[in-house]
Image (cartoon, rainbow, N blue to C red; front, side, top):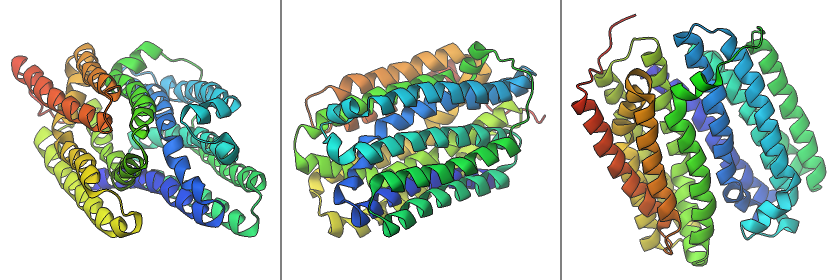
Amino acid sequence: MNRLLRTGFDTFVTSITPIAIWFLLGVLIDRNLINIFTLIYPVQFIISSIRSIFGVGANISAIRDKTKESVFSGIICGATLGFIILGYIILNIDKYINFMNMDSNIYRTFAIYAVAQMFLQLLLNLSLCKLYYENKHKIANKCSFTFNLINFLSLIIMSIITKNQIQITIISFIITAIFVLIIMFKTIEKTKFKINVLSCIKYDSAYLFAEISMFIIYLFGFKNSFDFGEKYILAISFSTLITDTQWDISNAVITVAQIDIAKNVFSYKEHIKNSKKLICGLIGTSIVMGAILYPIYNVDIKATLIITGIELMSMYMYPIYITKLTYIQIEHSALKATIHKQISNFIRIICSFILLPFCTSIGLAFSVVYQLITTSIIINKNKINMEMRKA
């Protein structure tokens, strides 16, 4: 349980910081900046995809395939790929902003900063992933907390000193980049360059393709939902605000399961017990946040209850199917895990194009039901024992 909390703490800090930043920048600089969070939301799944291969996959490969070089090589490959993709988005930032039906003149400077900051977040995540698999969770916690604190303080302090957006973003980026480079030099052990990318993909393929699908789902799903007007835009934004951090923290369920399975010390019963405690606590915080923030945002109650209700019910079921899927991925069949995960994601993609304001919520509900059924069938049909021996 302690490892779930420590791993979840890193995600909590990483997730809550941008929400607080854009809220305060909206107060200090321009109230429209609060929309930056929604504007760049789909982009986060790009860096998650890169981390999946060159962070998680590379570290599992280092353990299971005895290829120590995979960790260093994965960080180099991940950083290079991230630089190319995110750099391309920055060079075409106006086209991206216009595609999301927002004004590039208002959002351009901070949108560029937000995407650039995601690159620094990617570098940090690749380093933290190495620390997780070395059981150095306390060090990872400190690094994550310090990074987000520096990011938060540099932006807010500069926003108080000056209202020049270019000066604010450049100085903040430089300060944060220096910290990330220091962490990388201290964390990364330089080895010769050697990596089996296919092996890295195999160990986390289900989640890799899931992240790619999430990018498509939210890019087109949000665009579709926003066509129905301000009432639904606000309801979706409100629901995302009170559940997104909780969803991010819930990824600790996957991280801890992957580490234990890779090291042959996994216990399904214990993991599910601890995971449910974590998830119930997260659901509770969502409800509290919703009750506190509702008077401020004054959202449409019916639309918000539908969207948030589906989110919270799906979150409650999450540990059950995602733990089984993780076990199937590593110990039974990466192909089966990937295929079924992608079918569930394809269901969500199709639903994202339904001409309804609740299209993304409908897709989530169908996806959860599908995964609950298919993971149970695979486990039972193949008589898979999920109680592993001690290493």
